[in-house]
Image (cartoon, rainbow, N blue to C red; front, side, top):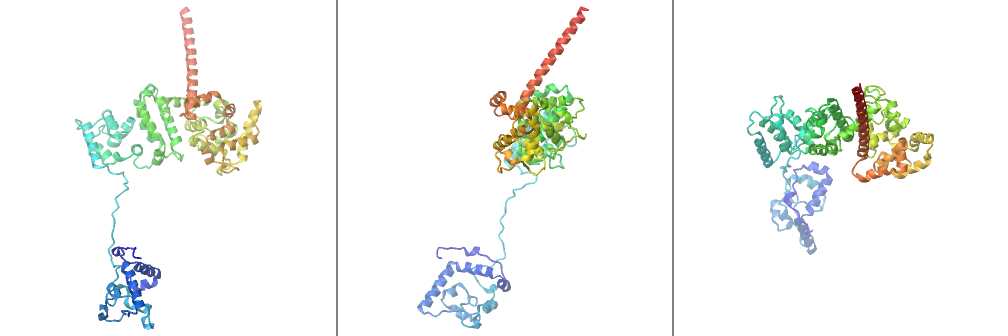
Length: 534
């Protein structure tokens, strides 16, 4: 007890009525325990015990005792003034603790536990700012000094071409955001951005302290929205097409400029907008790699080296694959068109599931037909089954009853057509029982009775599971361990399946185009020779 030290000043209790104390026995007990734990109380009890042992008469102060009796040297009297000491155990009914407590009342006790009504309040610094944290004064002053330098001599403001330096030096976002920032500041469409207006938007609007992803999100989104829609990306892509040296050759073909921009946007939403609702949130933007890809596109002169989203070669492959299937060129394809994809690689059953819009609802307004955007989602899912969007896409297709697990019956339903196709092609057929064991060995699901989506996401071979079920060409390539594919994987280990596919297809398509050009050139030369002879 002697080692226990309590600061009496901190044991502050609000004033309490006797009735409330009576009804709250637990509180009274805790209060008594605290009092008993005080060093002064410890010494008092020890003194009283010693007095009893030595036969000294105790100086007990009752509720009705006079003030004269309080002059004793007892330790009890030293702690409690006259009239207010707690009574000892009663000797008769008149000294009952119950009666005494009611008579004296807690409000009359001069206890070391001081009664106070004031509460100490600790000020917590503000940690949430709805419009972003204000910049520190030194950072703010440095930024304004740079702004003053860039705006010096331009009292009327900067025009768009001059403003691009502000985008790179002050805002530090990709240069193809210049036009979008310019329009955000020049709200009256005067064609000029003045110094004061830019300071209001960038410095006083707390854009200076925001992360790059948050800055980009704020620049792109509409003022009344908390998400980005596809149209929000069009201004920056138009500026990218107009200014990037790697896309300069497209300036004479506006139609392909539009198609390129659309394809980039569709790829962004396929990978980043994981909710699939067409509303890209700040959280999704931060979790993705779009900001890094934008910065890479701004720094790299060869746009084809920017494999994420912006590669022109990737766009070229997607567009040409769609054009090959769209035989009537109405920019729509149906089931019979899609079944011809990759030399009839897919089964009818999986194509039926795609057109039933189970994995994704079509944006096409024509019933029973897929538009270009729908095809972009399909080809990205088909050619890169290692990505999570692809795994989710195909999982929904195979999950016939939409219960979140793939059972033996569902796997067998899709493999039956594969087995039939192998038999028709006189290839060695693999029985479903053997395939089922192979599938489970590749995935290693937690439950041996079914496969769930998390099992597939945790396996590096999950893409081959879907190829076995509905893509015969890739199934055969997997079974034979195509050496060309193995060499390609080793040559570019950081590439995704999509990157390798797009690279192969672009080479094939460009070679076909070269042959066609050469054929047309020889025909023209032959025609010229005929004309000369006549």
